[in-house]
Length: 113
Length: 117
Image 1 (cartoon, each protein chain N blue to C red):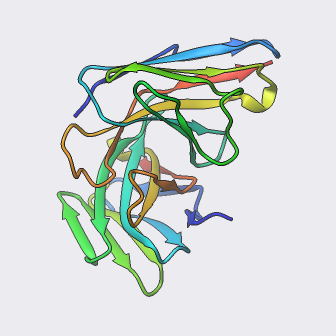
Image 2: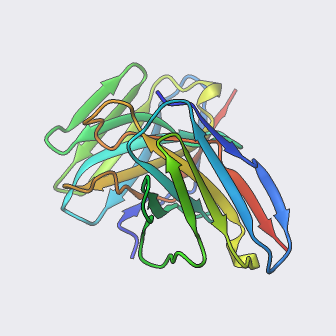
Image 3: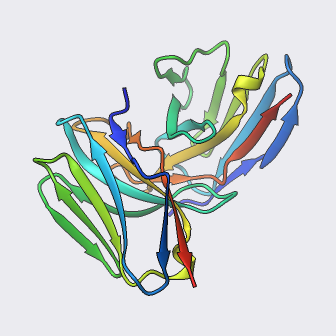
């Protein structure tokens, strides 16, 4: 049973517009959420995170929103740039997990010029 | 952040053979992990590599199939043994950040793309 779901395998967005990537989870014990970005032939790199005690975290062009009642989080990228084209993974950490992340399957973001 | 060198970056192997993947970190790290990403799927944790002791394996992964070594705080190897086509995946080494309380922030090597014929 997938505890972290990214239901969109891919997303295409015009350069300069907003990209919204979505992630749903089922385990109410998750208390920390992270987004990673992955380019081809490279390992994932940390992008942004949010604790369950918050509903928003912002870092430059990237904002993560957490809706605990809906068990849903989203990553907003604005404005989208060509270098944002990558696969984005959502990951969740249960309370006291000691770095045991549960990962979504990823969403491939394509930024069109 | 830690700099992680993982090799080989890719390999094509014959069924029944074994491949050892190396992971070298530029600084001492407390925790090292090995992940697998099967085609089109999410990352799955194989095991936690423990320095000086046996690795801690996740459900569905066993030491005979994925033996792991970690002789010191900067180096680890993962062996994929007696390979079959189902083992074709990307294998990733991962470490925690150098600071304590990094809240699950992991750093990854560039991965090993394994294809088994």
